[in-house]
Image: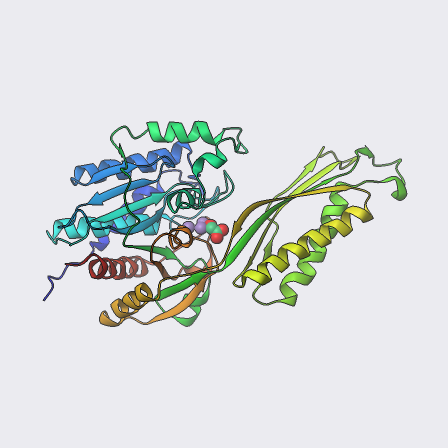
Length: 414
Ligand code: GLV
Ligand code: MN
Ligand code: MN
Ligand code: MN
């Protein structure tokens, strides 16, 4: 019979509060964007706590941070658990932090109970999951899974002017106590606990989502170039209005894409207009498009729809058009055996669960290309995330971490 090991709920809640203080915003959220000073402070705190516990700390070229508790057979591939510590600029306290800090709580709980595992367990905080400061998101997990090396984005510049290369170097240098991670085989398994970031679990009053896959995402940056001209003197036929073209395209896409396909998602999250003067016809309008779909073909169709709508709008307004694809994540399916282990862990604890597909992308999507992976979701209030109001009940935090602990013990072997 296995020794009862439980997470320390009070310690985990305190840890979430401690990290929420790093980059805290007045409205109760966090702004801890990737590779920022705040991100570095969070990494330092986690590293200090890990070293104090006697765990080993490593980082890799992409500044992914790893905390390792050795198993009885150090030669076996480890079980990897974790998420990310970076946030959106107006992010919540749980997106990423819940999975990372719960994973660390699992290590602490095992250490405190002196409960060994056959395989080592590694906690990971992946670099730049959000992609808000440096697009694309999931850079760290892409690098880890061999999908793309972090060096590919070396010269990407943040809206604040900082180059990724410089911020990455400063972040690595901020943790002199962390050794460079030796080359290791892919993990035996990866499990990421996360908030659902949508309304389904709360609506159905189901405390645990067992995630079977992630829908696909593409990010596009659309730029219309027209001609700046006088607002009062320029007749319609002379106007090359970049914002009017952008507005036409956006209005058309919002009126057609989601109404035409209940599974499709389309978001224009950023619009920059130049020169940005009340009485000057805009010469430039650049906007981002985030499209998502669980079906890969349908996702490609959404990109084609965006391109066609923008081309028509450019023609209508005499503008030139350029479209850059900034991210292309194919939908992914998680490992059925790990999905089973999560479901069984819920059953053993007498907790209801339901299978679901993730609407958000996650590091686990990339890790799943290199190692068997799956995710555990807990509900969040009103399904709200990427918002400072993001909220998860204490009970759901502790339940999610408890299921993670059981799953990890099962996968790592006793
Ligand atoms: C990740 O934050 C996403 O946008 O799905
Ligand atoms: Mn996240
Ligand atoms: Mn997020
Ligand atoms: Mn995310």
